[in-house]
Image 1 (cartoon, rainbow, N blue to C red):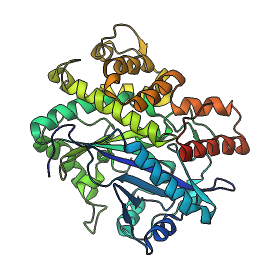
Image 2 (cartoon, rainbow, N blue to C red):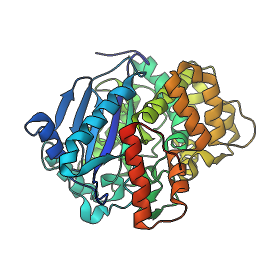
Image 3 (cartoon, rainbow, N blue to C red):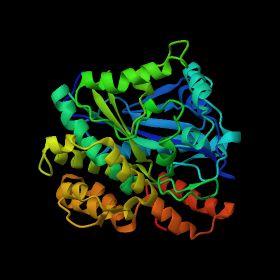
Image 4 (cartoon, rainbow, N blue to C red):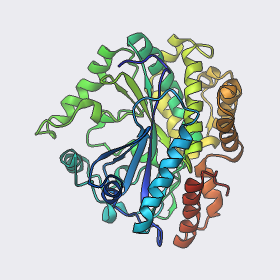
Length: 406
């Protein structure tokens, strides 16, 4: 069934399983799913939420079980499922850990690919890209799926999404620490995302999708080059172009939706869903052309948007934007940091959010991205025990649905 713009939503959240004793990743998602289901399966319907495996055996995905019209109570549903999973994991001395990357994992020695359903596809991916790296086996994100009905709606939504993508990490960055030290990027997940498919550059492109605004052009300019580039590697012809497209927002014409992928997982579901709700309302604003015309939105080349994005993944909300044309979209006329842009947008659409969502966005705007707060809490002390102390606090925030305070 095809839905119209903003009629329904799909949200996906990823979490890693870690041992309670030492925070090492624990690749037992198969045991978790078996304990819940009674037998091993890759997908479990749990009412309005579904659980499933991912590429690696220590990451579980929980997502809306089909499209939902309601973003307001979704955080409670996700929280109930997080708490149920944590209860099931107690017997394995294991718990869920939020944020977008494990700060201490050694992916070269600890990665275990999912060995069950779809393992043939995962093995092929591993053969092509070597998935034992941070950009593959040490990533957790939130995906937002937004519907479009036809080419006319796709044009509006894709134009708006492309404009917003560069500054989303300024709100959602949560991956500042890898290999036990600050990486220099507050959104290290997206830093790796840019290049983790360097063997076939067509798959990720410039993260920001190209200027394509209908199904036919998308096939010609994005899908066809991907299909050609993968042919020498996909000798068994088992990979699909929808599956291979790895831009920061991918267009799924098989289900008439755009999936936004540049959002790091936060410390609790209320923060995740508040960010999703704010992004949705800002996209509505852009689609309405109140801020800037559709033609002006479409005129942005991916390289110019990528330059902004590339700065934002380093400094998140503290990134200074100097591109006057980009600032003008948000009615700003002098150099401003990303935090100012998000505050300006929140002033425009904040009243459309629930009271709970407003509270969480205001906390982030006041206290900084989760990446900023993690770094403050670490106080430049990157000893293993200090990192564990801070990240176990994040685990408590997830279980108790609290915001992380440094």
